[in-house]
Amino acid sequence: MPQTIRNPIEWLWDELHDLTVGLGLAGRSVRRTSTHLFSPPLVIHRIGVQDLRDALVKGFDDFGAYRTDLLFLILVYPIACIVIAAVAFKQELLPLLFPLVSGSAILGPFVGVFLYELSRRRELNLERHHEDNHSWSNALSVMKSRNFGAIMTLGMILVVLYLIWLGVAWVIFKSIQGPQPLQSVGAFIQDLFLTEGGWLLIAIGCGVGFLFAVLALMIGVVSFPLLLDREVGLGTAVGTSIRAALTNPFPLAVWGLIVVGGLVLGSIPLLIGVVVVMPVLCHATWHLYRKLLSRQAAPRAAHRSPPATPLAAAAIRDTVEGDETSDEQGMNVVLLLVVTALGSVAFHVMSPWWWTPIASNWEYIDHTITITFWITGVVFTAIVLFVAYCVYRFHHRPGRRAAYEPENKRLEGWLTVVTGIGVAAMLAPGLVVWNQFITVPDGASEFEVVGQQWSWSYRFPGKDGRLGTFDTRNITSENPLGLNTLDPNGQDDVVVQNEDLHLPLGKPIKVLMRSVDVLHDFYVPEFRAKMDMIPGMVTYFWFTPTRTGTFDILCAELCGQGHSYMRGKVVIVPEEEFQAWLGQQQTFAQMSAPAEEHAAK
Image (cartoon, rainbow, N blue to C red; front, side):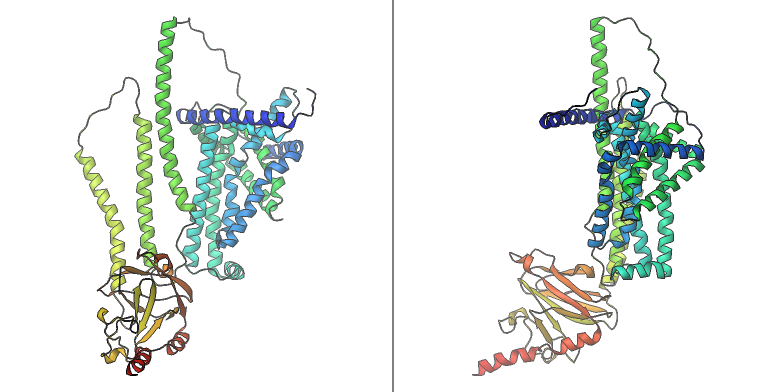
């Protein structure tokens, strides 16, 4: 067919029309996926290392045929990796840089599905002696596949697997390196390669990453090309891929090493080499699939039954359509529930909202919250998936009726026991930590925090080591804290107003808190400790600062119009600097002297 220069508007209209048709077919394929999970098993061939070489040669050949357009299409992959690296540096997630980039290979089979389509179309055109236009837009015909829904579902499974890998990598890093924040990139690299903990981190991380890579390879090496090539169920495609890996363990292990080696070599020059390596490996994967599975035989002609009467045909059609509609609605609910469960897990793993780096001894509070997350998360996911199973297993079918069972003592007993254990597992750690939270160790120093709309004031004991008494009836503009002027223990109390709070590093501190007007809450996120400040009461907690720095003080209780402005700073410094700062502050007696002189005059 002769090639002509088309009107740009006409070309754009045709492309949008094809895209709309593709999206409509994709929507129907998603509904179809839920009702066609399994199909008859397929025959798998045994291959050798020579077959891997042939697949790579054909992959290079496909890449040569599409090289101009593929360079544009596949640039998305390295650009995404570079963006990931930039985000890691910017968001202080440097320890996740290697897992982010290396783990992205888990998504390779999903990313490559568009390139499989190009190889499939080129192969088909060569067999039929048709001319191939070698356009990247051919890759978008994936959306017209009847298995597009299954392809996207399997792709989301790999995305979830990738996010789980990132979460596991972060847990491994925190378990080995501890909660302390990174000081610099150079310090991190030095700790990674020059310390025993760093090499342990590398060994465990690479070992666990290897397991994730093997799982991704077994799931995706055949399933994506198979779903693109034939009308098979999602479960059958994944099962066939796993059986292919188990049938050919050595060749596919070599193939995995080829993929890893190619991606490593392509990543060395700032990931630019991936532009070539990635499409070649994807095209070669298609030809590897062709060697693992036989070509699909032409379907035999179906036996023709005598035509039914119009009324009978209409009744059969209505019954079938009604059953299919009921099944589709039920399967849509199942998919919605599964996506909700997996999406919640994925959101938790990839959520940017997490704890600030801890700066006190209360890591036990973090552990308690983590235990609560695990218990509630597992229960939530299990219940939602169980509901999805029940909808799938027991949804309406013609001729079936539900059994009425008003009670089941055995089931109720198990649910009561399991629920009680789960609740106890969540409450017990909290009770233990609470006991530690309110049990102040011997020798702890103390200071007072006074909250009022909308500012913070602080009071430290003087040389006598004791804080003076107070009474809210004593509050005046000259005595904003309401200290007792007749109490000798309060004359040397150090009063800090409208300044940053300073505290010594590494010493237990008891924080006494009170409010002179409404409810307030003294909260420093990095300390993890907080407590309500109630008018007429003195509340307290204790903590030990574990690292120097300047941290924000917030009011965690809605206290009026200026609540959001009730902020302050706490500076953790060594003991010597703290004592020097404390010596520069005024005592209550020094603050009261000008007011007494003015009253005398």
